[in-house]
Length: 325
Image 1 (spheres, rainbow, N blue to C red):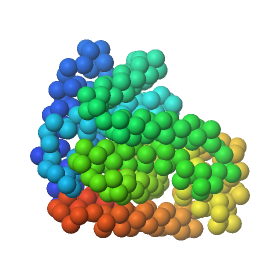
Image 2: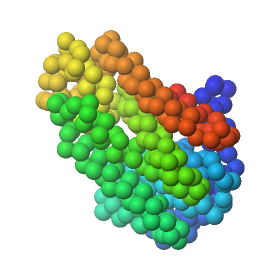
Image 3: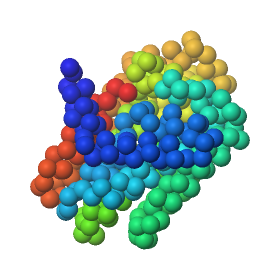
C-alpha cells in the first residue's frame, strides 16, 4: 500500500463520513423517481466526498461531532454535484468517471433541471438550521461559483488571460465552495468569530491548491486515474496556469498562442504543448504554486486549538498536495 493510498484510507473511511454516505443514500432513494434515477450515480459511491468531510472536521474544534449536523455536510455535496451536472452541459461531456452524464443520456434540459433540483434540495436541508450565517455563506459560494464559470467561459481560447484572471476564477469556481464548507462547519461547531475567519482562509488556500493540482493533472495524470481524458481543458480552450507560465517565460510561447488562437488543438499539437510544459519547467513551477497554497493553509491551522482534528486536517492538506487523481 502506497503512502497516498494509506492516507486516503484513514481520511475517507471515517465513521462520520460513513454516516454522510448513508444519509446521502437515503436522500437519493427518497427523491422523485425520475430525478433519483438520473442523479443517484453521481451522489453515491463516487468521488472522495471532500466537501462534507471538511464540514465535519471543521465542526469539531470546539465541540464533538453532532449527528444532527450531517445535513449541512450533505448540502455542500449536493451543491458540488449540481455544479458538476451543469458543467457537463457546458462542456458537452459524455461521461464523468466512467458514468454517462445526464446531458448525454437525457439531454440538456433534463440535466439543467436535475442540477437545479439538487441546488434546491441543498438549501432545503440548510433551512431548518435557522442560521443566516450558514445560508449566506452557501449562497455566496453558489453566486461566486457561477461567476467563476462565466468568467472562464468568456476567456476560452483567450491567450491574453493573466495569472490574476486565473486565480480569480479558480477561487470562485472551486475555492469558494470548499472554504464555505469549512466555514459552515466552524459555525455549527460554535467556533469563535476570529477562528471562523481563520478556518475560512484555510479553506480558501486548500481550495486554490486543489484546483491548481487539478489543472496540473490535466497534463500529467493517466486518464484512468482522473476518470476523464487528459489535456481536455486545453483542448476545450481553458487557459490554466501551466500555459500562462509558458506564455510568460518560453521562447515558444508565441507559437503556442498561435496554435490556441487558431484553435488548432489537435492531438499532435496538444502533445507538443505538453512537452514544452515539461522542458520549460512549467509543470514543476505549477506544483510549486500549489505547495505555496498548502503552506498558507497549514499556517492557518497553526492558529487553531491543538486538538486531534488539527492533525487530521493537516494530513488531509498533505493528501491534497500529493494526490494523483
